[in-house]
Image (cartoon, rainbow over the protein chains, first blue to last red):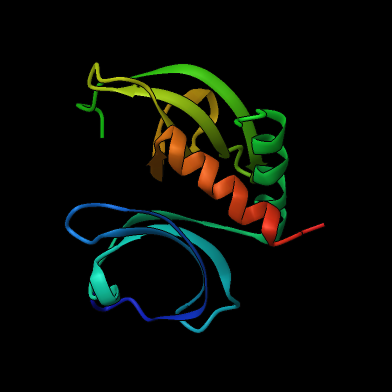
Length: 74
Length: 74
């Protein structure tokens, strides 16, 4: 995945961290110079490597928030 | 990806749909007979094909909800 060009514009939050130090994070990332999108993905310590993940537009994040709040998880 | 064994235990919500009918969905999926986990992923119409995505534990979904609510998106 090293030839992908990306820039982490904002680190919004860490969702979890495993024993090996990999973190599941929500960030704002500009991929290949395009407009930044929300990005939910696993990262190695110091963002040295990235795992599989998913990008989300503002509308998608708002819809995800609505769905999660309707699930009344807590 | 056809040799992966999965079962969609619950379709929780559709986050978005593109012009080709692919949907970004939040589901509860049991992968390879393991305990179901939350799963955020793109799907072709009728779940005929799956795209890249991410699995989330109950704790991770709760933490994601907290982060999203703190962002006051609306």
